[in-house]
Length: 130
Image 1 (cartoon, rainbow, N blue to C red):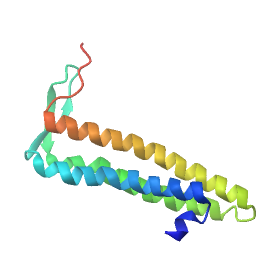
Image 2: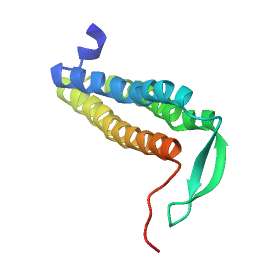
Image 3: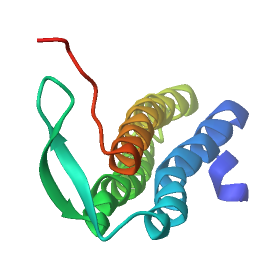
Image 4: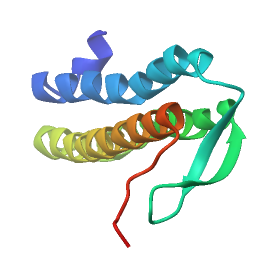
């Protein structure tokens, strides 16, 4: 826990946020997938009708990718910050930039996960009215 705050308080909170958005989609998926049938809608046409069905376990791809991306972002941010050890300010700014970008991407992937789970649960996608 102390290592997360070695680049400052704000960076420590950003690191905690990145860990949360990296793990949250996987936790949500573990909760929802057992409640789904074995075969779920995976692709939809412009009218929102299902065009492809797949195993409910295919829904784990995005959450696993989100978690791996969060881990890779933390590793890359730490390496980049360590490359700027000569200036404490540069070290903190480089770390913040990397982790902040990871948080933004993690939030987007969490939203994608929620949409995929909702679509699989209801069997409908978003209709564009064509």
